[in-house]
Image (cartoon, rainbow, N blue to C red; front, top):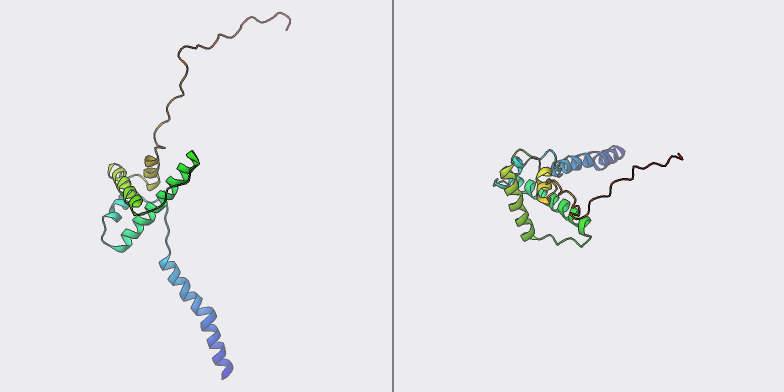
Length: 143
């Protein structure tokens, strides 16, 4: 009888409990795909009164902050700015502005617009006063 109780306790502790914990972890986990997440979804979530909507939009904005900070660091090699309430609020406003104009684009595309990456780079400046010298077309007969 004691062996049966011990076996039952073992099964509960080492097999059933982790399975229950795994189900709870899956329910509480967060996933964010900036390519699949649209601006329309973002606008819907920031306008939502549900806590889940606020959290979803918050994850999106924090992803965007990380992306933009990394991009800025790669360009300037300066320390990124601290993340605080004012920075997040300003970023929500920036995203909302871009997304209202482009509700069908992905959150990633909105981020590239905020970063200025969607604009075509300016053509390189060529000096106006210097024209390239014409190549020497006189080929020696010794070839």
